[in-house]
Length: 244
Image 1 (cartoon, rainbow, N blue to C red):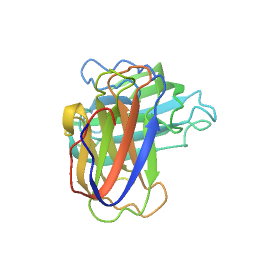
Image 2: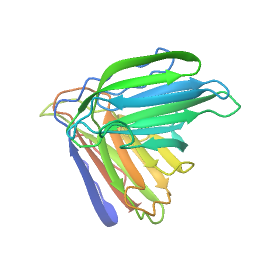
Image 3: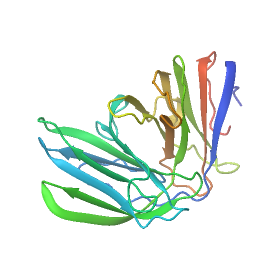
């Protein structure tokens, strides 16, 4: 087993995911849904309006929505266009967004507020280009950790752990969201070793509690999948292995 060597203070944000939730099927034109983190791409026409809302939440099925530039598989820095936690009915989420004068692609990410507790809810989508509201049941989970007061460049790594002895590699996706509208967020899929995710040199202004969040999920859908998300200001060695 290889060894992780971290310089300076290191803290680990750990998620143990039980049985990953089944995600809703993505639109054929914009795939990108993971097994326990809902991701979907939308191509909006000039000045098109889109309304996104989860419903049927209860205190144990709380959702959080993030809406950023680009398609689901586009890595790197992204601009946050909308964010919502509790503006929907009960503790659900609600976003109403209007595109600018140029056609553009966006990504919607929905995670469960409570880690290790998937939210079985209904997603409703309404667009001015299609005046019929479309609803579908979704079941979302995912790792979510909110934080503030980030200083300096920071690196985040989503490390997939084998579900058991002799298990396979877990493929992860990782977001660093700035919840401030117009702020810079980040996404990565496979920059880490063996299909793991790493985001390097993240700089975000996070002045308030929950100003920023780390969100991660998996592609695998294997029962018992586990994820660890690590953070460090300086990494002296980046050799990782998939069994932790």
